[in-house]
Amino acid sequence: MVTLNGHSLTLAEAQNVIFEREKVVYAEESMRHVEKSRAAVEDIVREERTVYGITTGFGKFSDVYISKQDVEALQLNLIRSHACGIGDPFPEMVSRAMVLLRANALLKGYSGVRPELIMRLLDLLNAHIHPVIPQQGSLGASGDLAPLSHLALVLIGEGEVFYKNVRVPATEALTKEGIFPITLTAKEGLALINGTQAMTAMGVVAYLEAETIAYQSEVIASMTMEGLEAIIDAFDEDIHLARGYQEQVDVARRIRDHLADSQLVTKQGEIRVQDAYSIRCIPQVHGATWQTLHYVKEKLEIEMNAATDNPLIFDNGRKVLSGGNFHGQPIAFAMDFLAIAVAELANISERRIERLVNPQLNDLPAFLSPQPGLQSGAMIMQYAAASLVSENKIYAHPASVDSIPSSANQEDHVSMGTIGSRHAYEVITNTRRVLAIEAICAMQAAEIRGKEKMATVTRDFFEKGREIVPSLTKDRVFSNDIEALNQALKKDWYPFDKSLQDKVTEMKGMR
Image (cartoon, rainbow, N blue to C red):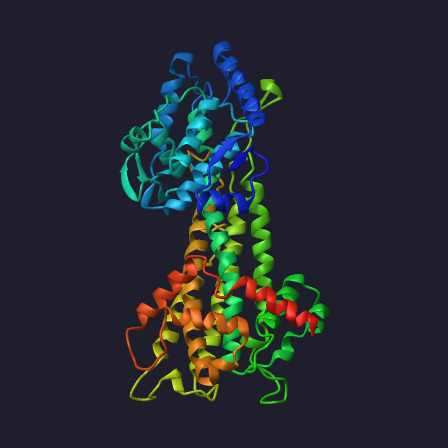
């Protein structure tokens, strides 16, 4: 069970809620803060004070006063008019993450919503009811208005949801779970949609998948090294300590551990003096990606616990301030960096694939074919990887360098962070498939060299991988193999037994 308090939600806890569907509850102390800020909103309405979003219109209409008898209509109109999402829906788990993050942000107690609104969000999570939210339509400031409006629709009994693996009207799922729609009152519609939860939720899911494939890429690269009889000396700790990047040191150590008992890797001078950069510079390139992942993780965990709506209520209502915490620039940058960093894992992987299949670069059968000439083997697998890598270069163009004015130029600079987060996820999806191709080629090359000579860790990968992708004994529709291994990697399948890895590391330390 995960307890939300608006301040301490971690990526690990988010992962348990999003993917493991762990139950969520609220912290009592946080809810007391919520009650105090709600009382402040009710005082503003009762006293008919002019406060943005509570007794005024929105955006360019901020100077239009709204009487207290119209505040409920104002919030309802806001949600319906802003539900302008376009295109395919976000993956269901991203929608679940949005609900989680919105509830956590409201629990900070700065937003002025009623406790029952937050409890209704938690009801959706615990009943596994996930709003259908179109992916396109957000500028990333004033927050993710269009996507979050589709989330808010569900709370009032409108829109659609994913429920028990089926897309149904929200009222159908709510009725089956005994959850009643609510009527939004002063500020609640605005508090639900004025935030960065779409880009952040997409970013959380993207990051969790990126972290997994970063680890997987190191094991796959280790097996490629065996297939190419690579030189292990380039991974000596002294080299990497001499430069000083901890992530580079860590990658080199993990590669050494993966290959600790391999009989296929070589020493410098035994076969050649140096390997190509795509082998020799694995710690430097993969390590730089890890540096970026650490940056992205830090920004996501800040944003997951941030108050990002407007206005915010402080000092029990004595101070109500309009600001710009809904602006998604910090996450926009982080998502662009994530896309670039993960794209490089694909770039270097594709170059290793080329070294595995090109007969001018190795002494293996051309294109790893069982009958070179008659059968093409892995020739077009490299084409497919190259295509994905090139596509990634388009997605890796920074979304955050763009802006366009909106709301009659009142909102004249925006982040495009949601576009950045979606593009980062596309890069991750493509990169996983490139790694699947490298794994298929590396397994074949290692098998040709002699699987009995493989390291304990890589041999574990090989055996599990062969249960999914058979040996290349003749040409077949390799698309099926690529997708099967891709799906295995996506299911958080670590291509080695972690307890086995620990044992190998321990044995190495004893020698």
